[in-house]
Image (cartoon, rainbow, N blue to C red; front, side, top):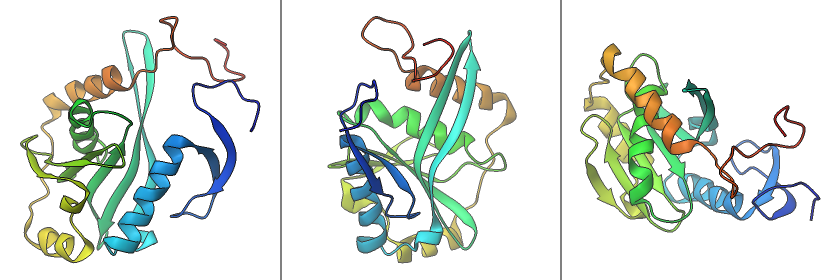
Length: 191
C-alpha cells in the first residue's frame, strides 16, 4: 500500500474503466469503477458518452470546496444525467446530487440526478427534486435515455437560484477531519 496520509485505505493504482487512466485504488474508487462498468456493460452507454469526475468549485464563508460529479452522462451531445457516488445512506446524498445537476451545465439543468452508494440508488428529477426511481435498475439505459432526450425540454435554472445551489454543494461536500478542521492534502499550504 502507498504511504500517503489519508482517511482512505490506498491499495495502489487501478485503471479507470471509462478513460483508461491510472487512478488511486481505494474502496470508494472500486465502487466507482463498478458503477462505470454498470453504465457501460449493463446500461449500454458508450465510453465517449460518459464524463468522469467533473468538478464544481465553490467558496462561501471562507470555505473553498471542490465538489465532484463522478459521472456525467449524455447522448447526442446533450448531458442528461449526473451520477454522484457516496458511501452510506443515499437519502443524505440526494439534495447535493440535485444541486450538482442544477448548476453543472451553465445553460440548463441536467434533467436527472442519481445518488448512489454503489449498491442502491435514487433517481431524481432535477427540476422538481423528487425521487422518480429507486435502485440501480431504475437508472435509465441508453435506449430509454435517447427517447427521453427527444421529448424533454432542457430548462435553465433561474439565475437567482444558482447561488443557493452552489451553497448547498459547498455545505454538503466540505470535508472535515476528526479534529473538526478541513483535512489537509499532502503538500497543501494549510497542511
